[in-house]
Amino acid sequence: MDTDAFIAVHRPQWERLATLTRARRLDAAGIDELLALYQETSTHLSTVRSTNPDPALTARLSLLLHRARLRITGARTPLWKHARTFLWEDLPAGLYEARWAVALSAAIFLVSAVLTGVYFGTDSVARSLMLPEEAQRSLAERDFVSYYFEGQASGFAAQVWTNNAWITVQAVVFGVTGFWPLIMLVQNGLNVGLSGGVMGAYGGLDTFFVYLLPHGLLEITAVLVGAGAGLRTFWAWVRPGSLPRRWALSHAARALVTVAIGLVPVLLISGVLEAFVTPSSLPPAVRIGLGVLAWAAFMVFMLGRGRQVHRRGVTGDLSEELVGDSVATAG
Image (tube, rainbow, N blue to C red; front, side, top):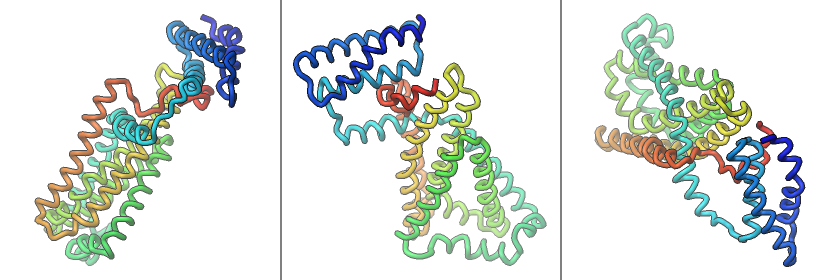
């Protein structure tokens, strides 16, 4: 099928359908015409999908039919249903689609953190080049733990949440560059590794994990997810596959926004854990256990629920009926 010729022949019908859809009032003849054009346009969309599935034309006709359907039925989806769809379908699907990029981000972070920790933990000369011995001892004996007792817990939680959200936003926004998430991952890995190496050298490795794991498992995972989602947009730009480049990038970017919004409550939970659980008087095993439970719940949501909705075709992107002309220029 010649797409250009198909558009030229049927454009007047589509334009007329759009006009009727926008009209404030319709008489009986107008309603009959609206219904007839809706049925014809539905046939056109089926023809396009079965013969020459042009993504730009498909999105355009889908949006047109969606608007016409709302005009015909007068249906409106309640806000709570939109929220439920986002939280229970779109978000886990977006997280699941980014799983391999997240795994790559985790590998980069862990390698840099472990190598740095072992290096600075076993080499006193290298350690002294980064921190004077007095600063090392202060960190191991006082500063690392005292950080979690600064100020009021509620204010500390808000500060931690804001800081982590800012780091994640950077990974998301600049992910399309490809290099910014990598720099951020290595930098954070070096910081964690240096702290762990110093604590280990002074016999405080157990303290390091007791005060890191309760909140750090979920917090670091959220940062890794943000970095992975950002890297996924970069990969969609470099290797779009069978889709037009801008179409693939648009899809990845919209799914990335879904992930970014979904990480806000995750980072809030990690901030609450860091402010109220990490420095609490609870036994270390209980504190770490609470952190593990929060992290495991997020992973089940991301990989378990995400896999379920992904199998049904949910991608974390907007539905094709809502994408509309914003992606019609991406072809």
